[in-house]
Length: 395
Image (cartoon, rainbow, N blue to C red; front, side, top):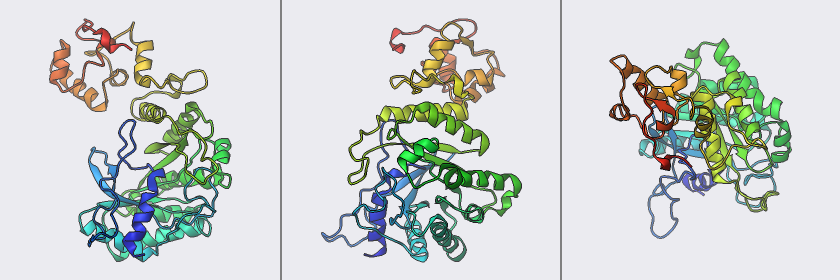
């Protein structure tokens, strides 16, 4: 196989890695292009190549290549299509080969960066060396300035974490389960604290103790992680407890939730797929913890520690706490406004800025500011009056 045939095979199996993807509610991200059709007179090996997208802080969608250094893996994770012993065609890249492919695709205008992971082959530390070698060729030999997300392999060493941080814009390690017990059921050969959580702790230690200019572009990369949802009986409370801990203690940029989907020829092939609404509610709740000032104890968990599937967790909280005590938009502070359904960080800042020029008198004033006020109406006062609420707003 040539380079791009190998990349096509690897990229097609990267659905397990959701980090960076634009993930609209209740839908898996579709690649920008479908995999290239081989034969039939197609002369361009890159025509129709599958591309993923990363979302930048300003909301811009950036096309990236999402692939593996190797699909060979010695680990036996019960859900994974790359697990040891599974019968499929394995592919491995040399560092220079992959680096050159990334540069070529960037020069063609197909991508602006890459997300590079790997199966574990020869141990986690050895595999991390291969990832670092590829990144060093990319940055130091080919002078690549595009976006680069490097995965940290299970068992990566401190110096490897540091070197990865000196080369990448983002690093991540997949915790997969929210704790040791759940991880044991998902991935029997992996160790939660020493192999998976420790690299995230080292990354935060490096950010706190070393100057940011040591990073390749003048600052240290952000960190993310990913969980498999719905395969081993974990609750939403378990997943979000770990997410809240990581937000606080390692400054996690984001936790990703990958709804389980069974893969043939794995021990979990007969298990039921995760309800996509559950994945969606977990994302909503994680944003409440990260961006809206909510504490874990305020989330509306039900009997077995799961969020209600039928309603937005922020709406549930507001119905319980604000229906009889609406907030006055002319006086409420930033933290209070962020708790109102329909108000996000940008709209709250818009309201605070507008209040410096005078009172807001009606929903129309909010709409004139570009604020979506219909969801907020049942929970607010505007200049001392409750806006009219249509019954259709209530489930």
